[in-house]
Image (cartoon, rainbow, N blue to C red; front, side, top):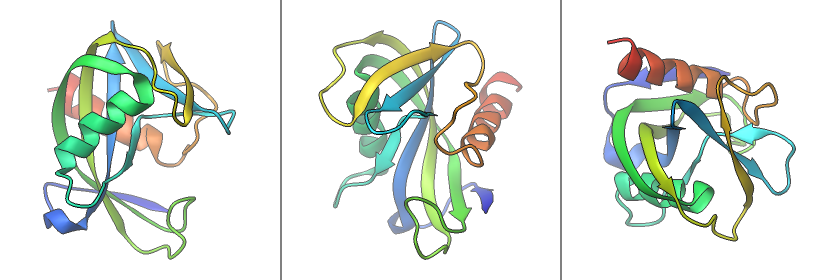
Length: 144
């Protein structure tokens, strides 16, 4: 599996948005109801939805965040078979960073709970992808 980063691609190639988020200097992770691992908020783009709308919607749906700032980081892609990519071809998404000021109630959807970590948790849902996305956000936002 390979993760690539791009400045931009054609908008129609962007199939999902992933949001690396923090609150009070801690990383925000979600725990899915059907898994014992932790993941970064994100999800698939709805038909005719702007990719920023996808990011805002997914951040709310998966964390309950109601007050936040969100910043685009870059386009990224994953090449290789994954849980969401049977073909193994290159799939593109938009990577964002969000600083969450306030959470509301977590919507009763697929996430069981939201957790805040000082460092990355050991049990990641996508251990070959998520650390690279966080590293990209760190180098873009915090190490300028």
